[in-house]
Amino acid sequence: MTAQLPVTAIVAVRNEAANISRCVQALQQAARIVVVDSDSTDDTALRAEAAGAEVVQFTYAGGYPKKRQWALKHLDIATDWVLLVDADELVPAALWDEIAAVIASSSPCSAYLVEKGFHFLGRRFRYGGFSHSAVSLFQRGVAHFEKLDLSEDSGLDMEVHERLVVDGPVGRLMTPLIHDDQKGLTAYLDRHNRYASWEAAARLRFLSTGRWGTESIEPRFWGNTQERRRFLKQIACRIPCEPTLWFLYHYIVRLGFLEGRRGWIASRIRAQYIANVRAKMYELRLQADSAAGTEAADGC
Image 1 (tube, helix red, strand yellow):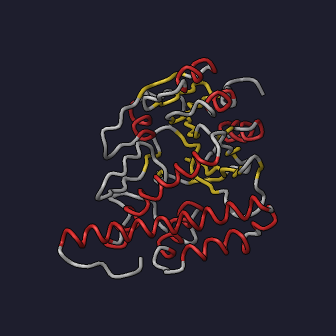
Image 2 (tube, rainbow, N blue to C red):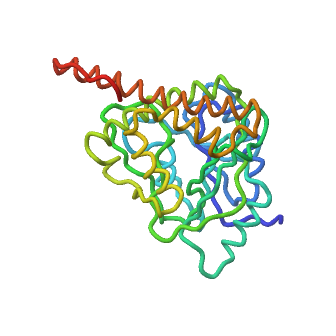
Image 3 (cartoon, one colour):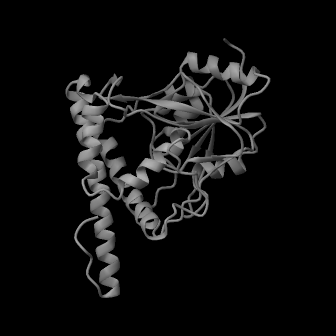
């Protein structure tokens, strides 16, 4: 398959020199490739342009919209379809074939979930349940990101846990993305420490108000994978032993032990991430109670 498809591929980045070239090279089937950069201090922009992408700079001013939603609103997208990928993701040929079939269909869905095939320490995981699906392909104008209102701005300029709200039916593509970060384990852990701060604030808001934001996807167990994931998260965040449960889920229930030492490490990191979220939640409560002259109760 060589003909370009009526797709605008958007890659939101900051300091992704280790990943961006091969990401853009895997997007050549798209009619337009746009890298939205937040003033990278490495040569991300140069590498993206050399690989064939258009580079647009974005400076985050806080609040809504963040980087991807800003791109959807301001890029003047002319193609019928939009594909969102991260810099550490590759679109394989088989997935492009599926995308072409969807576009050629007489009655396509408004959007499609795509699995992010988890790679860790140089290997694709088949077990452990670490891969997840998100809406990545959608028709122009039918989707926008959630408005998750946080009491404190985490400083994250890109949507991480925010999901796309879609006007219309959502289908699923069967071929996963190749989610394989080349920046190493230290960068992975640092990034997830920042994510934990964001999620701690988001969880506290949900627990105090009963909602994730002014506009968000509907948490439903029988919904699509995004909706089910959100439903389970709002249950799990009330369980005291949540970190241990996540370890058992990944390592035992989802057979992460079959991945060997990598499976053990990934499962432990996942459990520690949740432990960090809950510790940060407790710290935020202490800070709020100190300001109010009260004392936080032990636990999360």
